[in-house]
Each structure stands twice: as structure tokens, then as C-alpha cells.
Length: 372
Image (cartoon, rainbow, N blue to C red; front, side):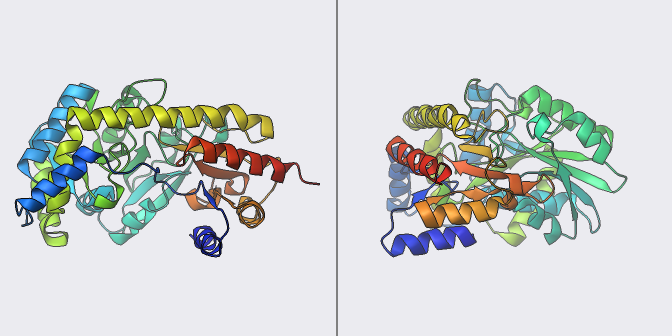
């Protein structure tokens, strides 16, 4: 956030800043979604909905699991939430008592540990190894599990590496957690943004995991703040009671807008944008290793590359700060994603701007690395 603040200050002063640090693509919200929101407003659909979300939206989410992903999900298992962050809050509130441990991938999404501590839980970093491509393995999970562990979290595709674990592999991890008396929570918010293989879900391969998802990434609805979770049906009444107390309900207008996300036109737009992101990814994957910036992991999803910068620096934060000041290229240092995987060696690049800007970023980066 310090680097983002500095990038914004430089931009306000007239400097041309190339934003490769922000996890939000440059695409506008799809027109069918916007049109649905306008219709909802015109109809006066602005009152509270049920705490678990509009029944029609819960049905649409369950139907999308069936039609697009081949998973059997009941609408009664779906709870619509104020963003995936709301889903994480509800899950942690439902599962944790004070002192319970949660295994969190390192590197991983930095806010997860805050949702754990919010409920008195103990976040335990699960250091992933570069030789495994920063992927969670069954052996790593087993070695870290203790008698106090209640939850393990994994994302697929993940932030910051873009790594993807297929649904069958996730289901095996979920069964391992269940056998130990715990729960695997799978973050699938980048699920639709997969490259080289079709999108998958752990729910297609079993019902042992709890899933969170979001309309933000694949459907491009970041500012609408709408997500969902899928949990065992027996848990939903308790989760709904928590939602009633904490949120009352998700945004009504956002829910009506999200109904249009599953329409043919919106899905076609989402697919076009996925293909465009894949072209951006390919451009960078081909250019960066030759500049001494190898990509760690397969980067098979999301819109991130995790780069090893150890050939150029032993302090990726200082590297990113100096790069920003000298060239106007804004990147995210590895420290944002954990402290136990040698974060000083790594940085994250988000390919969230158009190809012409990526070409410009590569030229500036090359000149910076080749400077005397």
C-alpha cells in the first residue's frame, strides 16, 4: 500500500505510471450487467433481500455449477455475501473458536490472516517451497497439521503466483483435512480465469470442502462487492444467522445485476476477456525469463506472475521502490504475501493493463535492469 500511495502521488504530479501492482483488470463492467442494475433501479428493487441472498440468484449460482462446471450444488448450500471477504468472515466465524489454528499458504492472500484473528483464531503460515512451484502438497499439509488445527486454506488459481490445482487434487486435500477432523476452505475467486485447461471446482469431485467465490474477477464486478460461499447444507442456517447479525443482507442492486452475469451475452464477454488476459500472460511469459526474471510456478490462472528477482536484488521491496521512482513501473513486492517463503526474492506482476502498456513496461524494465 505504501508503494501504491507513492505511485498515485507520482501520477498526480504528472508522471506516467504503469500500474502492474493492482489486482483489478482494466475492463469496464459488462454492459448486460449494467443494464440489469438499471432495470432493478427503475423497478424500485432496492429493499432488503433475505440474508442468504435472493433465492433466484442462489438458484442461478447452483445452476452455473451444474451447467458450466459439472458440479452438483443445491441452491440451499449457497449463501450470497458482501464480496468474497464477507464469505471469508462468515466461514471463519462459523468454524473457529478462540485458539483454533488455521493453516494459511505462504505466499498467499495477505488479508486471510486478519479474518482468522478477528475470531480469536491463530493464523499459522504454511511455507510453500519454490522447488514445488509454491504449490500446496499433501505432505506439506500433513507435516504442518497439529491437534489444534481446525482449518486449512488454499486458493486455485491463487494470488500471487497464479498457480492452479485441479479439482481432483483439491478434493484429495479436502479429504485429508476431514480425516483429521478439520475443514479445507478453497478460495475459487479466480476460477473462471484459467489458461491451458478448463475451469474446474473442488465441488465437482466431492463435498468435503467449503468454497468461496466472487463476482469480482471473472465477471468483472469488483466495485459491486458481491460474492458467495458453498457449504454443507446443515451449516447454512448458522451461517445465515451470522449474516443476519453482521450484514443484514448483501447489496440488493448488486444481486439483481449479478443475475445477468450468467446470461449468454455476459459469459461471452467474460470469455473474450479471459482470452485477452491469456494473450497478455503469454507476452510476458515469453519476455521476462530472458531478462533474468524467471516466473515461479505455472501461472495457469488469475492475472498474476510471481517473479524471482534474486539475480538483481536481495530486497524486492527496495527494488520495487527504486523501479517506481526511476521508471514509473509499479509492481508488488513479495513481502505483501507472507514472511516465510523468502519474500525478498520475489515480486508480483499483475497483467491488468492493455498490451501496448505491457510492451512499454517491458521496455522500461529492460532499460532499468541493463543500466550501468
